[in-house]
Length: 153
Image (cartoon, rainbow, N blue to C red):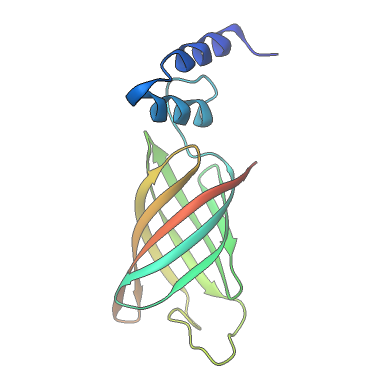
């Protein structure tokens, strides 16, 4: 059973659900327990797609958990840990990548090293985007990541 404040807030948001207010209204319903107020990153399991945009070539896909400011995840060769902060649709954080399995016949850009990345970006009820930089040896590698919410926690 919902509190009357939640019901009236969601009703108000649904009333705005027309024209240019529709994306904003739907984002607020998905992210916030009251419909209005502070947006936050949804705690959940996300798919992640990362593309190197400068300083290296490559891409990766995997899964990542965002939970109360903490990050954990991985793919076939690497695991990721880190932290983030978020407010009003913007987020920032840092992520450390470590290799857990050697790849046969291919030398990954981050292979055999612990690499820490910083990132900033935006988020919505459906996912998030981030742009960041990693220092790999003496090379700065820029990347873009797209996260899609698979399941709330």
